[in-house]
Amino acid sequence: MTRTRLLAALVMAPVAIAAILLLSTPWMIALAAVLFLAGLWEWFDLAEIEDTLSRTVLLVAHLALMVTIVWASRTGGFGGVQAPSMVLFKLASLIGVIWWLLALLWLQRYEFASNHATYARMFKLAAAALSVIPAWCALAWIHAEGVNGHWWLLTALAVVWAADTGAYFAGRKFGMLKLAPRVSPNKTVEGLVGGAFAGVAAGVGFSLLAGATKAQLPWVAAVSLAAVLFSVVGDLFESLLKRHAGVKDSGHLIPGHGGILDRIDGVLAALPVFALGKAIFGF
Image (tube, rainbow, N blue to C red; front, side, top):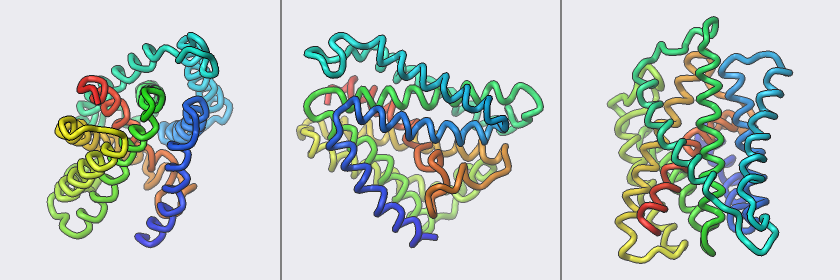
């Protein structure tokens, strides 16, 4: 399994990095929308929305919201002289941070919305919108801001990727204390610590490529740590959904990694907090 995961990562990473660094913001957010909506489709499956027509209508509704945000934010258009206003993107990112803080309360109540014969699906569909739309807006905000926005987006994603890798190997090597055994039995406190170190190191290292000054590095480290912790919340929340649905992975599209949602669950939670932290501390 480890070999398969590594081989898949070696294929996906260069493609993702090339897209982040080479694509313009309109194309980047369009590609991200496709990826996030694919993860959203898997989320509908975890919420046991079995009717294809219902799932399609829900997916189109989320796509329409994305398009509306872009349309409402235009000042000169992405191809015009003026840059688009990012107010709605920033507001959505803030909403995303608030949502993931509330998700911590949900994680503490394992049985909440576990019975899909009740109104549980409504809560999980609301959680889907509050997870996917703000993360997509945060991605657009980071990538569009400044001449080095693409490098800052790579930094934000590198934090999550490094944390995920560090947690995986640290957990396998040293893991003993369970982090959340009922939600995700394989996650350990040692894995969390290893992931935090790896994520912060990646954040600091990649931020130098993005143009961060030495004086900004402590703030970059702090925001990277916050992003790592939020990514763990996102990962655990998806694990909770899978436990409720009685499945191991959200899908089987990526060898050794499961589905799209399995790969972006941490990203969904980390991007809004990284974007907001970057704005607050001015790097």
